[in-house]
Length: 49
Image 1 (tube, one colour):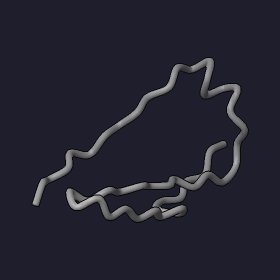
Image 2: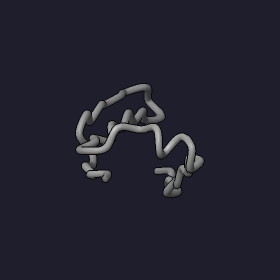
Image 3: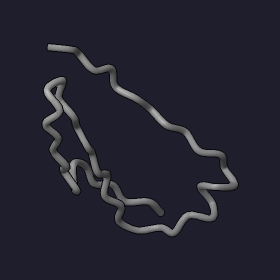
Image 4: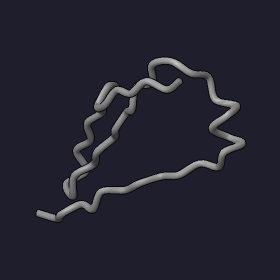
């Protein structure tokens, strides 16, 4: 089994300022070595101002 590293993404202040505030949902698509895939459309939630 492979171990996955956490990833952090950063956006510029200009992009962040133009994004709508409110609730956001993070979706995750995971694919195993055997080709099986699963999608979690609400893997994490966050709220921006």
